[in-house]
Length: 630
Image (tube, rainbow, N blue to C red; front, side):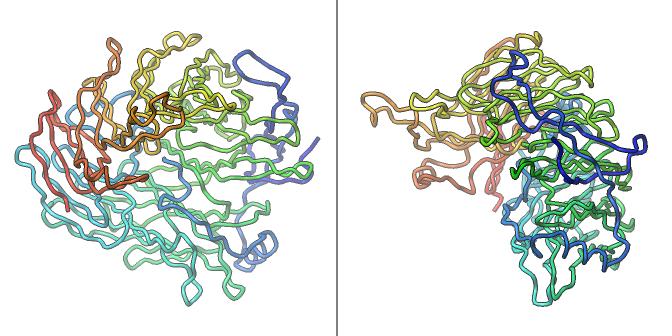
């Protein structure tokens, strides 16, 4: 069997005249390969020929390419404010924030690669996004805390970076998400980055404004350089193609067709993906950029030296469409961006934690979809790429029929959580990149949507408890579940401790946004925002059904004690609202007093909502101070 003319993005391989990536597209339900859940695939001999990634010679060549290959002349995605990113931690090499003992930083995936967030601190001041305003608070010492200034920006703020006395603010135009053209046929600017000098906290001054066509997808900051990725639909107006522009001060650049990378593979829709880099400390340094005409960028992983952008790609074999993902690799160093290569994997990506770079190898976890026409179930896989983005190792067919809920790479290990009725936690050894193997797995009720390193041999999981349904092959999720996993015996992982919060309907931002997770191993401290739902047993005098929802009774920060010597226990709770707000909420809950972030500075815990910042002692959670932010 072959892919009959199917072409994918690729580059000219320096070491191979013809490059192939062998991959699995499905699994056989009966051919069990090992007792940990992997199964034999009848399609493991399929291969994809990688074409070279080219640049257009002229503008007319770009037009002809789009007219010939695209099934539609405009792509109008309906997006959330976060684009297609399913948010999206620490580096595999650093397992706590003990390197910064005086205050906690944003919970990031990779050490040295900062992620934009709604709250940033330098250990004395806290910068808080609330609505369309940034509030600067003199936070320490807590007894003397006060609001220093407010930046009223009148636009939606997607996140901020703090670099010494420079503050980068990402502003977005919501209307660009629908790709509605202006009267002149162009699309509205989607992303504006404003850099402020905040050395005078009472009166910040605007240093620089960078304006980029397209909607904001994601960003990172490495050293003094901010890297921004935007997506701009390839739009025809009167038979002309609207090319994206980038502007900083007096310098305005319209991307030239001859600078746009593309491949010969046809797609239903095309998008200009821009990667822009600028120096946050030096407003006079010109920005750099690269532009790609590819499918929608949907996930991002960034190491200190490389950017990996994932776009969906579909194969058609025997009239059946199967999912895959293209991974574009670019090098970054001091603002310089260089396209390197790309690779392909079957299946789709869950989130940024499904990817990792370690010892020059790129590792990725994927899920392949259900294809009943072939009698093939869904499956989960891990692939290892070399520096040329060629697959050198793989583990395939894990947990057939189950969904991937979370992934975490830590050094030469990978941990996956899948779920259908119970939660298998897989431990995968990646030390031999060409022969990764499953070492063990743990099956327990519930699942984890986020995995966080406690240390080299222990993980914290945040997810949901579950009860198996009697009426079908599934389970009813219940309250929020915190687990501490012991992985010291890789062949027999175990749940060392667990704690369940609330009943069915209980929720936490951490399940969708890792930046809401605060952990300090040295303080045995874990803080997460939780919306608690509780079931009134009087409503069910005989038996509480497993699918019954509770009513909201609390929203705020759960402050927990976590250590290897004790069970997970609650030290206390901090809320910014009263019960009236909860009683009025109905089925959905939304309040400006909902706690969204927590951080600590020395011995003080700060909890932050859009309306209030509260300060409590870490020792006993006694309230020290509170400030109104609105």
